[in-house]
Amino acid sequence: MTTRIPHAGVIGWPISQSRSPLIHRYWLRQHDLAGSYERIPVAPADIVPFLSTLRQQDLVGCNVTVPHKEAAFAAARRLDPVAKAVGAVNTLWFDGDTLCGGNTDAPGFLANLDQRAPGWSHASGRAVVLGAGGAARAVIWALIDRGFKVAIVNRTLARAEDLASRFGADSTAHAWADLGALLPAARLLVNTTSLGMAGKDDGEIDLTGLPIDALVTDIVYVPLITPLLAAARARGNRIVDGLGMLLHQAAPGFEHWFGVRPSVTAELRQLILADLGVVE
Image 1 (cartoon, rainbow, N blue to C red):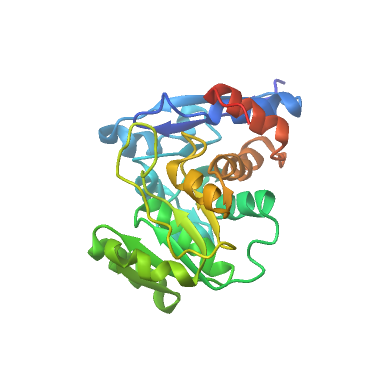
Image 2: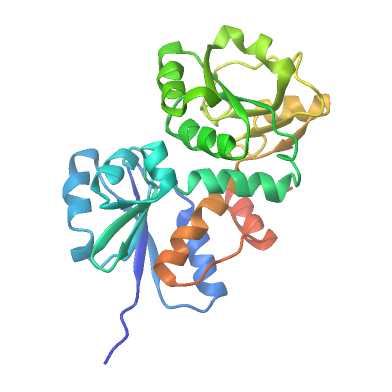
């Protein structure tokens, strides 16, 4: 008899920029496990048939990135609580023949802050979240789970209002022009937009009024220190970059596919930083 080698991957369109293979191959080597993890480009027109034949493609599951998280949500027959609340799936695996879907962005976001800024949530209060897209959904769920009241700020107010209606009384919707009035009461400021991402030029955020003891974090990790984080650090705020969220969100999927719960170590972080060409 031969032992079946588990194969997993990450699907998206485009997918060439994904660093997930570096992460999972590192863990496979670290734990001396047989297995593989690849980038799998799937065009939007092909996502439904791809997901419906996932088992036949000899895959034990996959990570899911844009623009396929909602399609993965629809395809999964069993969902974890975060995926149900957020309405999007970024990790797929099989339990027997049942396709299961989870959203690990929310726990990944929390684990990153717990690791890089210990004690950050001990004094919960108001968190201000910039953006109202899919990533914001996971972040808002995570913050409410930790006891925060969340102010959602978006350039298109209607999208913020739609998101606030999903999460109820623990969240409120605000126009971008309201940001200055919200900052003085903020314990945490989170950017989930493309603001500051390499290749983007959306202007700067005025941090006047933000308490010096507030934590500022950005889910963007290219560049590692975004203009928002640089400005916050310069005025004395604690900051947490977005790389750790990428690393921590990967761990649950690895456990589902390969049977071992991996750790996010300094060595793994340095591996990804080297790929980014960044020296801390």
